[in-house]
Length: 84
Image 1 (cartoon, rainbow, N blue to C red):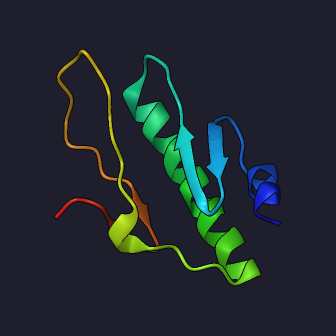
Image 2: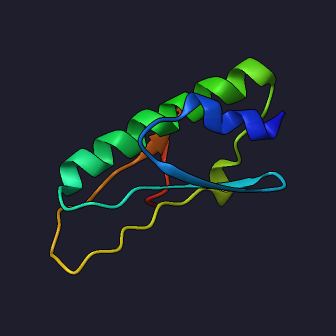
């Protein structure tokens, strides 16, 4: 069942291991990448709601790797972001 999660995602890469997952995207336009990742996080949230999975807000984080200076990026799941 968890392997079906990736069927609802688009234009991102994923890694699944047991009940852990990772969604990632690379490119040059950070704003576009952020939007695509957020759109897919919304899809993950919808999929989890549909199948009765609960996302652990405490264990969910986002990481941005870049050589450039960037504004603060906020990604969220169910209205909660990982920035404290």
